[in-house]
View: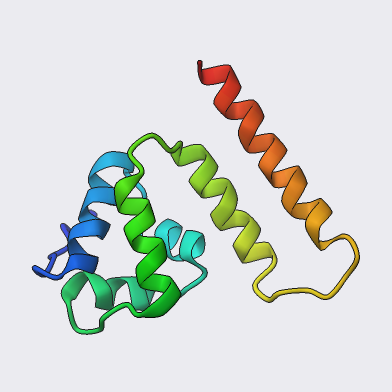
Length: 111
């Protein structure tokens, strides 16, 4: 049985609740999408740790965007899990372009 997560009154927790309510993504999927750990997401959610810098900026962007596809968010999360560190290879942009093209195709098919 899934637990009903508790959300603090912090900005981060409110954004995470919005993401969950509008996408159904779980903690692990959100963590993969944000290139962080599930425990970090849980701490933001409970208000025991605050997001800073790029993490906070990215959370805010996600909170503002209500038209993104869960399937694409999961694709990004899976890509992040498969590539946990930045790489210094000539094909790094090619891999990102492939991911972007697959997301554009999915978006176009929804219209």
